[in-house]
Image 1 (cartoon, rainbow, N blue to C red):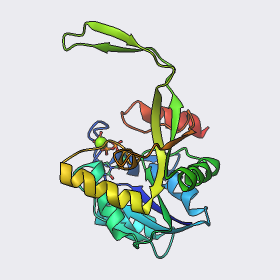
Image 2: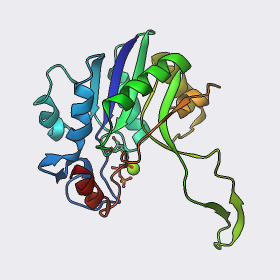
Image 3: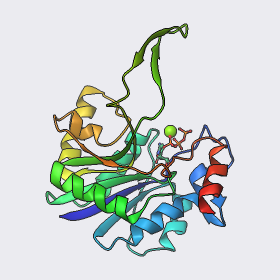
Length: 220
Ligand code: CTP
Ligand code: MG
């Protein structure tokens, strides 16, 4: 199957609250986005890459690879994914992966596992079992109950799904005015059960300023 990638680097990083969007902050002498981008570039099976980013950041990626596609970011992550999706060549025989540029520490094994699982199951995401205690509470902060965490997972990227599921999923969410917080949800609303692949603890999403120290730690 053909393999494509939508690389998401179009967020503003409101929670990080720095002048530069977090994915373009340098850690260890390199922009955060480039760590995972280079991992994807090393995958020879990926034949089509669209980078979702503002115009001014295109040269950073173009310097690494010729022939990239680009899309403008939307106001939400979901819109950014859609904008990226619209730049891809329409092909039935294709699996599309998405990745948050704010997650620098993916591995080539993980990329391969996610594509393979999506090829086999229609959709796949990497995930980690939740290891902490989860409680449900009301608006006053009073606990309603403790949730059984044995079948709960924290979802990461990369995620991947068949091109046709993404197309149909976007049609459905747009007709229904639905918002989804991740990409395999586009397959879920069509009745598919995405396959979870074991993610990495290291595969954190840089979100708050404190996370930058973690990135530095993992780089050592
Ligand atoms: N993203 C995007 N377009 C958006 C929003 C997010 O391409 N409109 C990308 C971000 O660049 C990031 C990834 O999606 O790599 C995950 O989103 P998140 O961590 O929420 O990043 P931001 O939206 O930039 O951060 P915040 O929510 O704190 O503003
Ligand atoms: Mg966000």
